[in-house]
Image (cartoon, rainbow, N blue to C red):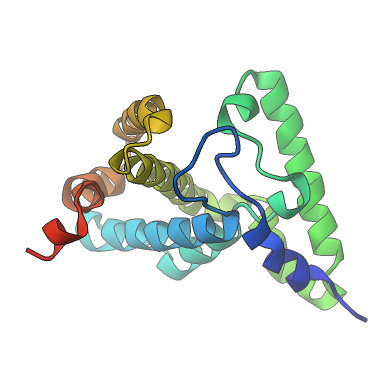
Length: 194
């Protein structure tokens, strides 16, 4: 059987994010997913080392790496549209689930069970998905910081909103990341190397 699954996953690099906004630097979902995976992994390690949690950091990283893969079929729906109201949000969740099933169907049968939890949230991964969602929001904040630092006023309100969203997350891991790592994103390269 020939499978198109990995060829479709490879197309993540073709799906741009932040389509409704003028960007100084484009970001695609492959780049975004990498950033979310790095942050989710860090949040899991922070939870384990600082707060006595028992997260599977590698699994958090894997879930994050695939968290937006369905967008190779659906495209990236801008957040203000996706979450405009519960009706749109629920319809979009159904569309994402259908897209996930379509991708899974591209895999040989023997691999589908391995990939299924990456497209359909499983209760056993519930705590890890919370970390992935938090990492996703942190990644969005980082994008806003980068655009704002480049003088792109298009992201001014988005930056304020993302900072507020991060402050509202009630996870110790996120608070620790914010207090110890987030400030670095506001600095220039010269300030990093001092």
